[in-house]
Length: 501
Image (cartoon, rainbow, N blue to C red; front, side, top):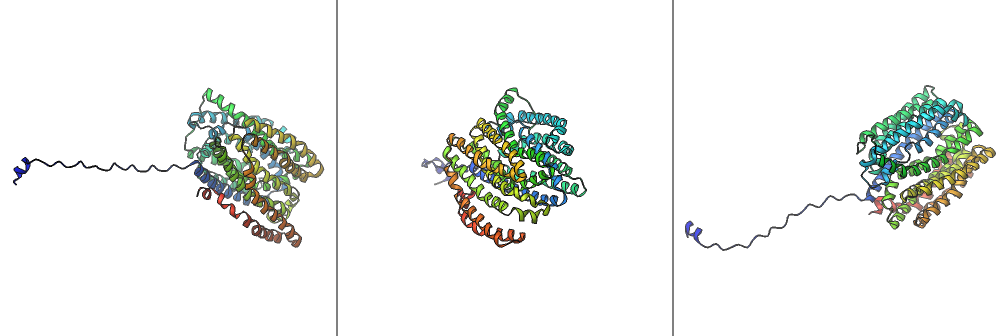
């Protein structure tokens, strides 16, 4: 057959080829809320642990450079600043975490409220600082207060971008910002203290560090926020935030009212001792609870409509926090005197009488802060105001009586007693009434409590056998690890990575 014949011959039809449909690539798996929370907790814990370790080391150096009176003067200024921080942004930054709307819609208005309120507060404080310091029994603190509290304006600028970083679980970015600020704070504070600047070294160093952190937050925030104004959004923000701001003021007033009582009654030197040991008792809270709180509110808020999952999330968080913090608090309380002697020097040993009880307060505060975030996620703003008012109303008379009767030791006993016997049960009742069962959280704490009992029993034996402070701390720490770790080791499956495995 020729080529022409082939062209004229009938063609046998071929069956149509059925090409397989194009395979769509699998969409890239999106991280779940649980994985975001888990990663956020780990980075936040690393951030907090590293920075707090650095603060501890720098605090040891400063304690050996400065006097107890210097600490008392700084304590007055720090107490005032902390209370201002509670109210300077009127609670509106929490809307950035709690609301599911596009954050770009309301962040500019939130920043305007935060910065404006902070500036007004600082102006009022600058004018009234002499009166405030006189009432606290430390008139020499006025210039330190006026310098240190510049930080309230810087915090007003930083509150929105830093909260957005928390909302997006970008704790690795916060680690960079906070680490850089810490280097500036520590280096400048120690340098000024060595040059004889006294309590003012704390104030200048802290403000310089805040400037660094503000710049970092603004540059690295994934959403570039500038001040703006929308009247309707401002009204929504204030309706949401003012109850939370009031609750925060009450919360921090509760934690700072002791400085306002101890200073006038016991004097600036006693206040310096009290400030030192109070800071030591707060280390577990700062390391464990603050790390978790950067992501707990966002995580609880997204699980608020799923009560079983929320209960398990709360139980896991409480169990792990108690497991980590309980041995630290127990060791601080049981070895208070030898620890202060070894680490800070002989001049701080009288503070051990208060540290024994403040360590108990530190552990209770960790649980209470988780309860606070849980109630915020459940829209329990009004209930929080009532709880904090109850706490303040109960602790103030107890502090006055305790300090008059037994100085800083009496103040510490008053704090620990009210928190444990009045406030903690009250939080539990309110949370339970909102439909969240707490028995899973109680069961999650069984192992840490058993381990803690064994740890405390070991300290009784160690302190009866050894009198040397170095041996007490060294042998006691080893005994605590041997007894405590095997009891809580099975709880490793509650860690975020293990829990999802």
